[in-house]
Length: 425
Image (cartoon, rainbow, N blue to C red; front, side, top):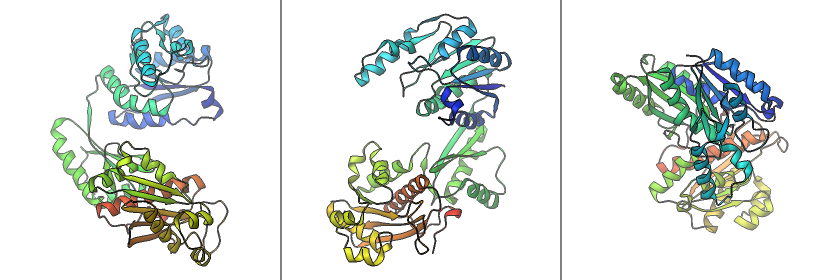
């Protein structure tokens, strides 16, 4: 089955936007044992879009067009498809109803620009987009299933799982591939997982397809089989895998690390407070991004300067002078201060050198200390994360969340993380 991808937008051509959608759908197509046939990227040019649609539809069984569904004049996909398949633009009643519902829910008033998103080729049916105002749409032209999808990744990705893949299956009469288990792993690299599987499970059955997908900061592990006769075998090997990597499994399906932490806190009836320096509030932001976080989150303190560590959390000036802000002593004092200032059960504190400057031979860029625990039982640990500033902050945030998750669940917090990020002793 030949599946082609047509991505549109001047921002893709100029490099202002990095294309992640084609990589996502290519990974998703593996569930159907398929790979893209042709991938083409074009700018916001109507004539080029028309010729590209006609060219790809002539040689493909499925054509996925990504981008150009918005309300502005440079969103040309509907117009181009209308011309390519000779189907006039018309007000689509389903698209209008969905847009009206979307606007009403948010208290928005639809404008003429918004209504442009309801003008679709008459031959098309909509593809639901619950996360945005632009409906996807589809038609069959010369036996090619053409599906138009929004370019915003947060809208596109759910549509792939919920609509695009099922439509491809239906169009190609493909036997459904049952993904029985999706595990989310944190703390092991993709290569580390594969190497361990090769060593520990040399008899892995061919009927159970094992796949890895990096979704930073976690890795999704998928177990897939075809046919009901392999369901038991699938579950058996998924359980073996989960048992071996249990220290690193944060949950199933699409759970995020922040979700896993919040769920652990909820299950134990505990609350957490944060004291952050180098991460600038990202730990607190991650926790509170999840629904229901008010049940588990007390307060967050961003204390970047030494003065504020002292003023806000009571970290002693002589302690900071003697040991420095990036030290075991300082993060323990920060955690203790956060517990005193809040009524939380558990604290997590962090201080590090994000770079690219500010390091020394004794404390190089990439060094980070974190402390966590309850009053009178604070633990601390040092990591070395030799990476760019943004990656450093994201990785340190994820590590801090996982340390608290482990603490709450009674798991070891002395676990070895990523092989290339060993602790600097």
